[in-house]
Image (cartoon, rainbow, N blue to C red; front, side, top):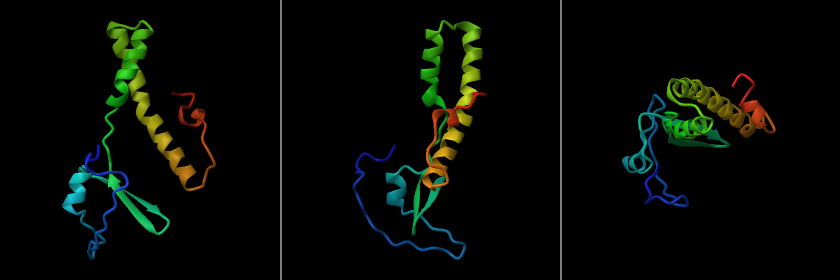
Length: 123
């Protein structure tokens, strides 16, 4: 999560160099404020490049919800563990399809997506 002292409407401008290898250095102040790690995502939008930190998705964001749902369905013990593993393995492919659909919509290649497009029958 970004530094709470940085507000979403905050704008600061800084000129940075581009090396012969097309590399740029993110100013330390920005790097720390946005909590970058080892990866950044670049988005080409009209005549601009947007660079933002990549958040690591471990899947743990969904673990509690998956477990709560399975427990409410009566699963326990080894059966709970097996079902949890099965459902957890479906989260990443579904997220990848969600991102792909969003990209297609954002670029205008596709008008909209239905939930059935994201969570296919094999999920």
